Amino acid sequence: MPDPAEATPPTRRLTLSLGLHQLLAWATTFYVPAVIVGDVARDLGTSPSVLIAGFSGALLITGVCSPMVGSWIGRAGGRKPMAAGALISAAGLLLLAGAPNLATWWLAWAVLGLGMALSLYDAAFATAGATLGPAAPATITGIALIGGFASTLGWPIGSLLLNELGWRSTLLAYAALQVVISLPLILSTVPALVACSALPSKPPPEDHRRDRLQLASLTGFFALRWFITSAIAAHVLLLMSGLGLRPAQAMMAAMLIGPGQVAGRLLDWLAARWLGPLSRARIGALLFPIGSLLLLSGLPEAAFGFALLYGVSNGILTVNRGTLPLLILGPQGYAARIGQIALPVMLAQASAPTLAAPLIARVAEPEVILLAGAVAGVSALMLLPLRIRHAGG
Image 1 (cartoon, rainbow, N blue to C red):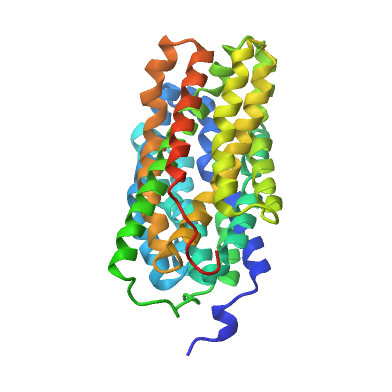
Image 2 (cartoon, rainbow, N blue to C red):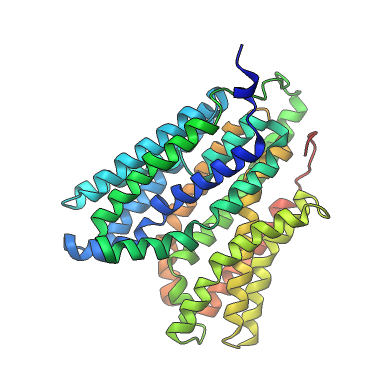
């Protein structure tokens, strides 16, 4: 018999530990290229776009591995998978730090792709859902809120380390953080076994068909939204500069996106007292197209309003990506479903910058953002058929 204290850790402690883990995991993996790629390109004698291809390959690996990671967490709980993620990420960072050429650089990102599948939000959300069952949404919101500071802290701290230590020593420091902080956090707070095992064995056939339709709607919505988000993120300074802003203003507008994302997660948490989860998700989905419509004014200052609403929208939907599958489809098989949703989402995220580049090169920036807003508005229609049907939601 498992120890009850082992199976049901205090919710607050789990939220804080997984939130801090997410902050470190994102800052030391996903946001690394934005910090070091310029220096690496000079040292290895190549172009930043060639180096970014290794990162895109890592995202593809993350997506392909996510369903298997979700199933593993669903069977065994999150301790072993997420501990393995910290160790594999550390190994990838060590390999990256010592990369003498492009082949080693790409190999290191392949290792990091697996590490990210075992470490980032999808793994953390699956762990919370497998551990807490129907009580997990509040913990998922807390994890996303804390993890939302990864870019806000990761970019300036990473830039400081880069200037003081160089890119190789910065990566060595990141690897040490994985082993010294992330790994002990996981081993001391994440349960080894799934706590919520008293679940129905098999849903009725009509529920199964309905759940498949709901899962398809959720997956389609998040894949489309993350495609747009990834395309904009990769070209954000170019897009902001094309809205009539000076270079310093374009940078300021782009910097609003990060705080907007944190504000969105906080607003989602605060609004839970008055609005249900689907209402919050639908509002969050519409903030992006509403923000894009501000550009119709033709005023350069409208770019700041767009950037803020776009960030708030992304922040709300990051939380929803973890909570909606649990609330709509229930805790049965939740961790595996998170992995199933992650596969097309990560594939969309990895391919978007390359696929969107020709359009961005040929179409004026305001029209690009208006088009993205229109697509985001269409994607929001996929949320209309969804219903909260399970207890605890």
